[in-house]
Structures are given as structure tokens and as C-alpha cells.
Length: 133
Image (cartoon, rainbow, N blue to C red; front, top):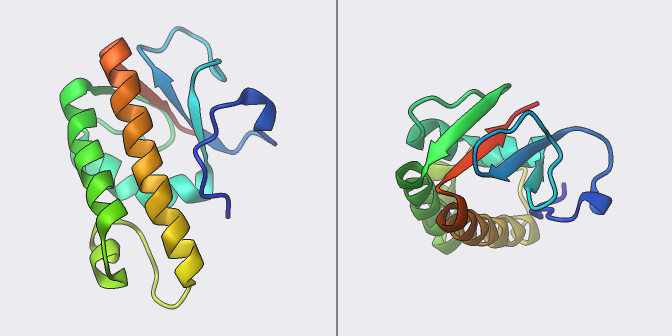
């Protein structure tokens, strides 16, 4: 699994990504300046988005306000600091026994990086649009 937030369009392979677009949707996907997560990695952090957004559509477009993004970032920051698998499992969609310590470390780094990126972008644009599969 690729636990990286991709911000360079040239590094995308295929089309199975969730896009984080800074600002409202403008009838265009795959925008320069967007962040992308591979679909199976997004599924892991998806419970945070579903919990913190009033109208989250897993397969469509969803717009998150600055307040919703602040709440998402707060949960992502908690995930980045979790010391145990049990704590992490309360926030994210994780199955027992499938995670090496390296993968859990990578997931914590992703949570921190995604929180930082979303926080920075929402300050610039006021909203984040999440474009599902």
C-alpha cells in the first residue's frame, strides 16, 4: 500500500484515487495543486471524514467547510500520535492482524501529512472538495 499523499500529477498511476481539491469544484478533476490518496488508503481514514462532515459522499463530490476540515485535522492529529494499535483502531478502519509496525508508522506519518496539507489548503481556499471514485 502507498501511504503517501500524492501532490504531483506526474506520480499518479491509474485512476483509483480520491482527490482533495483546494476550493470549490470547478467542473474539473485531476487538478494541479490537488492532493491524492490511493482508494484503499483513503478507505482507512474514511471514518474520520464520514464522522466529521455533514454530507460526505464516498463515491461522489463532497465539500468540507473550514470548520469540518479543522475537526478532520484534529482527528488525523490524534491518529498521528496514537501509541497503540487499539487507539488507532478506534479512529480508523483497521482490521486486527493485518498491520506490521512499519505500516502503522507509515499510517501515522500519512495522518500527520494529510492533516498539515488540508490545514494549509483550507486556509488558502476556505473549503476543500473531496472527489470520490
